[in-house]
Length: 435
Image 1 (tube, rainbow, N blue to C red):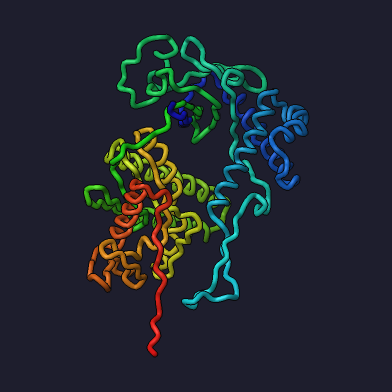
Image 2 (cartoon, rainbow, N blue to C red):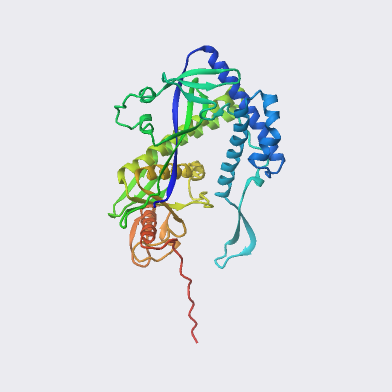
């Protein structure tokens, strides 16, 4: 019997309010919910992260209802929201261990580095919830109505809003959905279950972000899947090398130009230091994040559509890898560390799984130093300035990003061949003694 796995997606539904007073009711609920989250976050921080969800709910439930006038379900949802945020932060900290040098030296003369795992104990202050929002439980705080509207519970009463999304009205009315199934309607086939919904007010518009889950058989690739090695960077956002020995480069020049423009604007506003400049800085930061998310979304979708089902996408495990480069120009020196490589990885993971493909993460050790022809590992073979790789042993020469993608693809092939943990190891140098 095939093992079942759970797939999760979040769909965004735009809302149309029926009355002007509905906006006030939603705003009040979201602000009180946000304030309650900050209270729970402070309590969890003061308790040194020892309490669990059940203990926090038991201790703060009545205070949340009395101080913020929350209903029973919302009071419990506040604690779950805070605990979920701390769990996500702890995962992010675990993926970025702290590194510091010791007094000892390695055989090559470099200082020995110590990596320390990080968790929530590294936080100096509690997590702050700044954006008003509210997490609504399906069936209690929000539900569908037979006329196609949504019923949302507020602190005072339930209100009706109209979702602006194609296919939903036909689904609720029991009518056949005639669209191609590339939008919201693809989740209305009966296999997806509606879950928690987050109500948000973004740039003057109301949205409901609905979590949906689906159980499916665990994906199994064929014996000879397509193996695609993916090298991530900034000069080329991704460089792929596939099973047909074809290499594809996705240029990042336009991305670098736009990021440089954002940076110049931020620096000019920071020099002013006025209140209006700070408001403008916040708007620009949000705009840059939305643009960055869209770039990664389009890029991950293109990769999945291009290679199709039964593909093994191989990525480097960048956990604990430092991207700071002293050989880059000053304007681009920190771009590597600020680009959302992890976001691209997450988007590619869930999109590939839905398409019938899988993601494999392999160690990044020596992927840019190994010659894909003679397999000799030599750091000096790579020229960062010219973006070239030339092997001193066999003379093989190619683009350094292409060499990285080729080596990553090689690790994927070894995984398919039966090596559960493929990685490159540099052979120990042997010294000969002349008598």
